[in-house]
Length: 129
Image 1 (cartoon, helix red, strand yellow):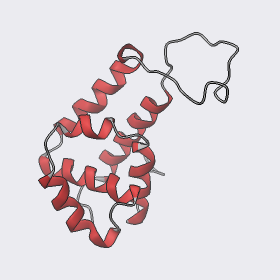
Image 2 (spheres, one colour; image 1 turned 90 degrees about the vertical axis):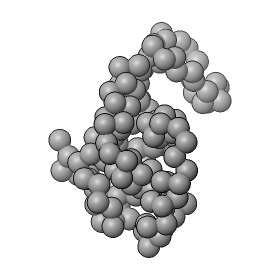
Image 3 (cartoon, rainbow, N blue to C red; image 1 turned 30 degrees about the vertical axis):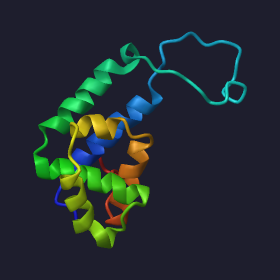
């Protein structure tokens, strides 16, 4: 069972969702995502404030919380089951080679993985404000 505060996880989820939905800083044109093969390019300028806030929040967590946040994303992604929690945390601790924020914020679908990870432990962000 994760020791990390669910409210902290929910904050990261909210910021990850903001990053996923951030305006690309481009004017709308007549093309559509299907024609463009769902390809879009985000520039650093388009989401630097949100990315910085999320990164600073993650890096302010202690090492145990950071490892649990990574493990929670892995559980949500299906790499580990809830029963393998201790192994997931141990592997997250062993594989720390880059800043945790860089790793997590570079993970596509981070918000969905964290939500799914919470759900595996019967937790949610339903009451998060």
